[in-house]
Image (cartoon, rainbow, N blue to C red; front, side, top):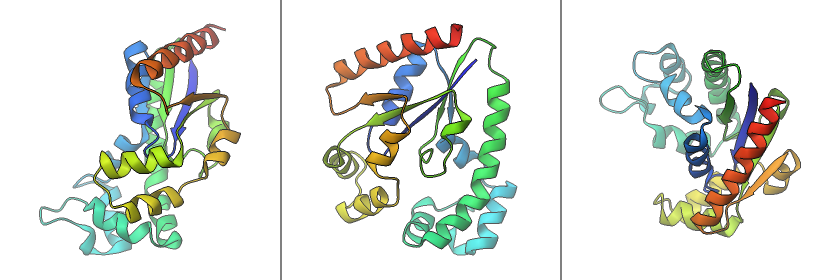
Length: 199
């Protein structure tokens, strides 16, 4: 089994790359999706978040109000640290379960947005970074996700710098390119990952 950490700044196009890797045959473990599952209504994770941040972070139907919680934690590093201390251990445990269920010769891609920030590179056989310029990230966040420019810049600033991400990269996928070029690059990377998995 080859354990790959996949990361990139918000708006860099990591989700598109992970989708293309799955098309090639990768087993995807998506930390963001797991992070949503572990704070779903009725979970101990959600109860811990409400205990830490109060019932104001819930929607009318008892689900986590992610935008409201985001506006609290992204403005305050201490509150973000509290949230991470609740969610990260739960995500880690679930990720390990999913990895253990994969085939012995699988290429398992862990899609981890905060891999750089949390010093997680040593957990993987290699790290793939999806890279895009800050201008591209900002444009995608405003145009495609409907964020305000101010909110988008705050989210980008809360993450590691582009330079820090590139420092830990074993493989870089440039996503300042048209989709056809991205697809071709992902196929190249996939061939390399399969070769390493077979070693």
